[in-house]
Length: 296
Image (tube, rainbow, N blue to C red; front, top):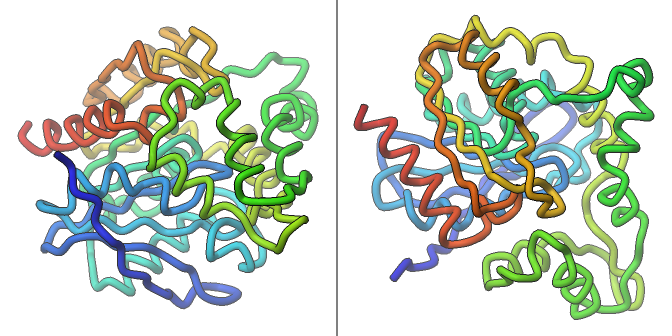
């Protein structure tokens, strides 16, 4: 049975203030675990519970999220990568294993491109590869962000009368309603700020919009051929709303494998974009992929 480990909090000086992070376990080898676009560090708890006996797992709240929600812009992958580099400096760590989930995968790619000496190896959990977006939307990145992130942006504008009401909202999410568990509940609870009857998500809408746009227009994220460290992609078979299609199609994965011949792909056909890290089955798979990469 997996034991839930209580994290320790860190505060790291960065441009504009302090970056908040959580750390689990001890050890000389460090895993930097980077969350998704509207998530926070606590979403990495399932992974940390599986790895903390072997690694020190450190997860930042990216600026605009979690306890780093008050950090100002600029946002974007380069800013987040610079914050992660500052986190590594604060830890006294030259190189780390870097795992990025969803948008965190793009931060991880940016880090590997901009700070290649800081990344020992890379694990991408349903993130990091170029997104397939219709040409009409690519011509207007802001419209593309609104189309892709519409439900998430709408949630950030909502208020909730109680914590139970927010949990109930999430319990109806197509990707989560059949897999609800204590990890998801803790993740959802940590996302709230304010007081009854006007609780709301702590996540900065401005940060989400800026980061979503950057994922579409940032040319650094297409420089995959420059990444020479080991790379593993764990790909969920179902999308953000549990649609039975992967976020990254076979053509996108094949193109990435051409750019990065060292790429290893691990498939999770029954899991979706959320359950890939927020369930026991998903966390077992992602942790296993990271450990298999180390063994190889």
